Structures are given as structure tokens and as C-alpha cells.
Length: 513
Image (cartoon, rainbow, N blue to C red; front, side, top):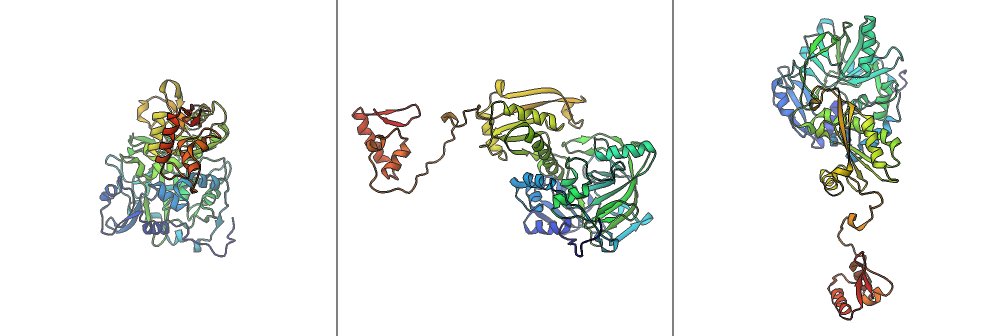
């Protein structure tokens, strides 16, 4: 990982530069006037746009929120479109790019270095996000640690609850690689060095949440970026972090274990999480760009579809479901998880049925592949799964509850789901919204479309002449006659009826008889 690049573009994947692009695209509300930190959450809640605060808190800090709160902004960040976002991510996850190490004197994220007593979490524009939160939270942190068993860098995304100037609670309750790594350090009575990046490009956040086989996840970040990540060694540990980030919080996790209360906090399911026991993060240094842009993410609340976490969770879920479907059915077409459900509970799958039973195979694959997904809706490829209206139509016209629903119980579930009412396992339901196998082309499932006539030639055939070589729909009679009107065809048919020469077949076509 030596510094082999003579020139590195440290701004290409800088969060602040992306925000500039989003401003130009009309995706950002810019708040130029000073705003107290207590007012930040209200400006973000339910806002369909990202919000850039030019002067947040008494320090007048630059603060941005909700950058990842829409699929459109995530697509723009990855230089693709919304419908191509999943295939783009899948392709890039399959092509990791090793990082390139940068010397400290070249690393923008270490332009300012604050160590010891100069490093102060309460000097950062960290705001109270929800009314009943235990304290202000750093919510946009990407955590970097090293697995001693493999030497690989592990990257995740976790919140930090401020406990003081140099201490914060970190949520390590849910199963994760970092929880396992920390569990080993705790068992040995050792500190675990951790670095928290605050202010990262969305591609880094997407990579950090992707479930992939064990590997060094710095290369995974490079894959999703589509370029090597410039990395630099931390000031107070040997961890490597992106040199082009806005800010890094260096420190360690206390070896005491899950020992201190953390929470409550407005969770990604849309409700509050309860008070938990969690480890404590101890700050040793803050390094940052001289003009660092601090980042916060939105999570929970009534407007889930506009939150960063729901949008990111949706992509994470889509990736895991696609990989499961690739082995379960012959031709999956698309996967979409709505952000409004929290980005995990309700999944939509479209496929081309090649053999009977593939819909149930798809439902079973989704059931088994992801603990978060509770409901899966499977459609034919002709349904646009990104469209609520088309899914509603498929549910209304292709679904019979006593025939097309698959319900199963006893599945591992996420405890944060309040509908579980304290149970450790839950139920899942699959909805078959497809046309019965083999009937997709049948008339009762053929979707009406406006008539499209080819260029018409004058002096065409009469109705009788056109019908002489076989049955015709009315539109085909118009084409044969060169008619762009059709009423003269009706008058011809009237004569044929009167002569007893006209009939209709089962498909409604006209026939001579």
C-alpha cells in the first residue's frame, strides 16, 4: 500500500465537493443565517432535500445533514441513475480496488491535529436529534478498526452518544464484525483502537454496510468509489483512514465491555430504542481539514423515506436479496426496498417465471437471506416495482389471499421491531402478485394499450378482402384498408352482417363465414 501515485485528487470524493454538486442540482436547502444547534433537527425532519447550515451553533460551524436522504442523491453521488443504483453497486462491490497510502504531510484530513486535552467532542457541532435522546449524538460516523485474526481493516457505521469532552457511548448491541472484534479484545482485557470518520462520501457509507466475504474493507471502499482510496496512518494508532475525509476522531474502546448506559435514541425503525448497556469510546485525537464540513445523518421519526439511514439500509437490503435470488431463481429482474418502511421490512422482487414454482422459491430465498425483511411482494417483469401504483394494481388484480400468500413463523427477527412485543422470533409473509404460470400472454391478462397504426397506404383492401386470408382484429382491418378513421370499416361490416357472412372467433377477431 505504498504511496505510488504522484498525484491524488483529494477533492474528487470529498463530501464538501459533493454537497456543492448537490447544491447545483437543486438538491440542497442552504441555510445562510445563524442557527442554534437545538434548531437543526427540525430543519432536517421530513425535509426532502439535504440541508447545508452555513453557521450552526455559537461557533458558526459548517454542518450538513440528510445528504443521503434520497435515492436520487445517492445515485448522483455514484454518477448513475436511481434505477441503475443497485446494479452499479453490485458491479463495484465485485471489483475491489486496493488503497494507496499517503504521507501525513499530504493528507488533507490531518491539516489540523488536536491531541490530548485539545481534542474536545463538545467543540464539534453535535446536536440533539430527537426529543428523548440521551444526549447529542454523532450519527454520521464510519468506524475503522482492525481484525487481529486477519489483519483486515473493518469498517462500519455507528452512532456515538456524547458523555463528555473525550468520552462517548458507542452502540455495539446488534451483531456485527466490530462487535465480534471488540468481544475478543474485551475477553483479553485489551483496548481496541478505533477511528471514526465524520464527513465521508456516500460511496464509503454504502461500502461500510455491505455484507461481503471477509476482506480488507479499504479495498471495498475503493471498489464502490471506482478508484483507489488515499489512506493515511492515524496520529495516535496504526489504523489507516481515508486521507480525503472531512474529519477523524481517533481513540479506543474501553476494555470494560458493555458497562455504561447508552440511549435512548430515535432508531432506524421509526421509534425509540430503549436504554442499553454499551462500551465507551475514549477520544485521543481529532484530525480534520482546515475547512472541515461536519456531517449529521437523519434517522427515525415519522418521515422515514427522507432519512439517510432508511435510504442506506434499503440499498444494503437490496444487495443481500439480489445475491440470494441469483441462486434461487433462474431470472431475477429487479429488487427494490422502500425507504418508507425503514429500508428493510418490505421488499419488492420482479422476475421472469421460467418454470412453475419459481415465485415460491424467490419468497423462500428472501425469507432465509435477511432477518430484517418481513414482507416480500413478487411480481412479473412487466410490473414496475419502483411504482407504488403499479404494485397496488398487481395486488388488486393478480392476487388471491387464499392462494397467493405464503406465511411462516419462527424466523430470527430484529429486536427493535416493536410489533414483536418482546419475542425473539417473528413471522414473514410472501405475496405472489404474478400472473398464473403460463397465462402471461392470455387475453384476460393482456394490458390494453392505445392503438398504434403504421404508416398507411392509400387504396387498401376492403374488409371482405382483408378477411379472406384469415381472422382480423378491427385494428388490423384498418391497417389493411389504409384507414386512419375506422368508421367506414364499420359501415362495411354492417353490410357483411346483413348478408350473414360475418362472425367472430373466441378472441374477438372478425371472420368470414
